[in-house]
Length: 123
Image (cartoon, rainbow, N blue to C red):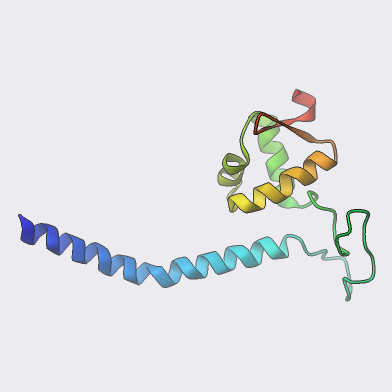
């Protein structure tokens, strides 16, 4: 029995070793995609000229991208989700949800109560 377990452990470890570079690539691509989600496609060059009231650089306002729309639609459908669950459901890293949900809150579209988020129209 121990030979069987050793063999299976070795097979699993070999497969994990094969997948490690793909996982690292996935993480790099996810970070790049998250960063691109914050880029204003209509700008034609420098992003340093205009600063909004929040002190952020030029670009679209926080909470105005596709992921924000997905998060808002999800919360309207299923109010009372935590940020990590919102992230999981829309397919982003939890840290990203913790960035977009406050932007939606600043716009008056959602509110946070007891560590979960609700759309304003369901409050």
